[in-house]
Image (cartoon, rainbow, N blue to C red):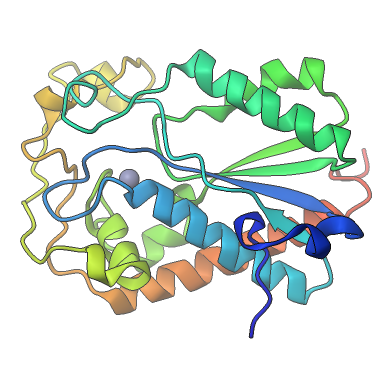
Length: 253
Ligand SMILES: [Zn+2]
């Protein structure tokens, strides 16, 4: 049997004398994902990508520990009102991360990757805030879906429940993907600056999407999902190994 690096599957004997090199915290959301993907889509993606990346990194001689997935995220207007969508305030996200960081530090763990699947979860402000309090914990946020390789593998990945998330879920959790998809039709802002991104306000989901999806999920395949997951996992595993083994994460000045 392949060794698991998921904390939820370990017992105290497994961990009693182990030295953990790096903790990986999968972070998802509980929200509608079109008509065809489950509310747990982001959580499943984070959890599975984290576990697979940890396994691969461990083959290269590091000892990672995958923490339980955080299933709630920061949501937008127009999502928060939908049945079953659970919202965290950004300050709650910060507080949860603060407590997890404090626990890890007490246990001598000095590196943490937050493996995020949900666009509303902004860890940059949280890491900047917590660095003041926990200067000896290296915190790195990974938004796996932003990896540049994905654009070369999926033609129109979409933003939410589109081709990218659909193919990944067809590979990871095929039993939870309904063949009856919507179209993922969406609109942008009527103001150019907001579409260009240099001016920003959160999107009201009810105003921009017909079925909560943004991006067409039709026509993608589990084979594409497997390629995406394998490539992204390889990249994250390499990052895990580098964060543990590099003495200095900066080049020589
Ligand atoms: Zn998602």
